[in-house]
Length: 315
Ligand code: HSE
Image (cartoon, rainbow, N blue to C red; front, side, top):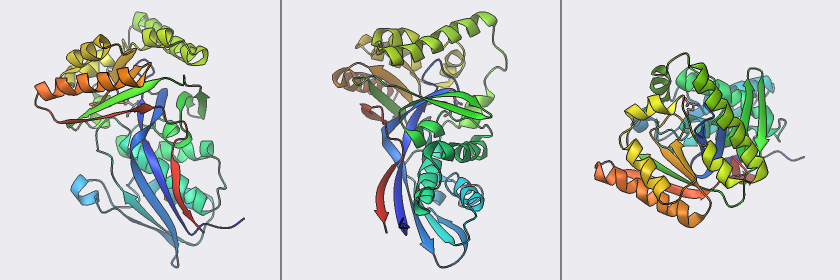
């Protein structure tokens, strides 16, 4: 097998939680995303650069950056003694609820693994990225990193030990994501959550989560729509999200199956049964932010089944 000397990988944005599945459900998008290029060097150890780091306020210290830190651990575990340089092109907004740190981690891990001729499977890379989430927000949740690496819709049965299940995705399911230009740190949106929940809420949430998984297997979009309800996290987080209720009414009013907070917010997402409805939902949510004089950007597309994509592989 030949060894690649330079590999460039796109790490995708992800929608985590998917309303009722706090920390246990997520899916990958086709855009936006970060790009990591890994190439072999003549020195030893890992070096790291990111042109946008200073402007974005993200760490360049390779032990703290969510691209380089998991890559360094992977190289160490693989016993690689040569040199590798990682260059992160940080395209994703920080604190957006779109899995920015996960996108960097996924791209870096897939690039380094490919550079060494893929000794690990995609699934085996996920625990490395989970540790990167711990660095980024203090909590080792896998609902962004798992779909960013393996693609599609993913269920996290357990984070420790990690046990992830890839779920099927209805072909005509389309997602609209709108990112208002407000920064909300995941660490903060986790800190505001109550640490216990009423049994009644837990029962409702379990019903919805189980039904959402069933809907994906049964290709039942109406059931999927009924299941996209979060009675645990959303009531708390929506309090700090401007325009949330209006955006929900706008999305559901134009026919979206369901609506919710993407990850820890402030981005919002809707799922729809056609591209036309998904486009309409995106523009209606965007109008809500326009009325609030908040700039935003929208992304519409299918679920990204592939996850992180190798875009260049030079031998
Ligand atoms: N499940 C995590 C949370 C996702 O909601 O805090 C963070 O993007």
